[in-house]
Image (tube, rainbow over all chains, first blue to last red; front, top):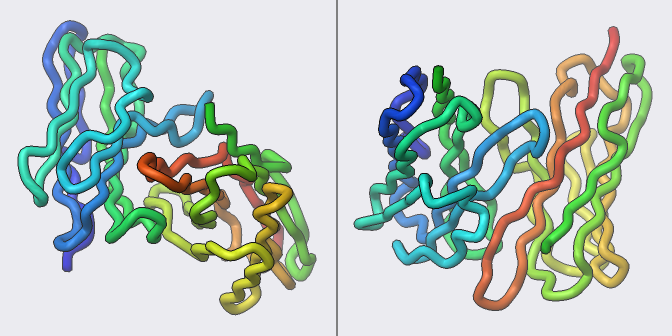
Length: 113
Length: 113
């Protein structure tokens, strides 16, 4: 398996634009997590899915953020409209079952100017 | 609010020194405790997943212990090498329907040759 695949690797966008980050989890993994890495908070959990269903989105900063998992092999994290304070590295991770080790994608570095 | 705390925040040691870090986590609703190694410009990779009170895991010069009753885990590195330089993260996995994987802020280790 190629591992968790995230795209794009880098995204630079202007304030106010819509940004969509994509994630393909490892096949057979039924939990998927979206994290945001910042200097202040480290790896901050935004939302996680189990069997494609959002279980906990309490970490999503505000209504500008939304995430979907239409099927077991694809998830998106959307920011609309984007703001400079959204600039961070966003990681997607998947694991086989609850409690199992998580495998991380390479991350998407988002810069909002 | 789930709180996962790691200490120290950073550590500088000489090659050959042995060192250890601490992770504290909620002692209720415990399911699993993970340790990850995160090298600069890479993604976190799992070192250990521990589920039972008293668990001890070992991988080469790195080992970890777990105390679920008091809510702490130690990571030990024996005879540190420059290639051990990285950020070490612990993550708490809750039980029940949550399945959240919450990370601590990490301990950044720098090993000087």
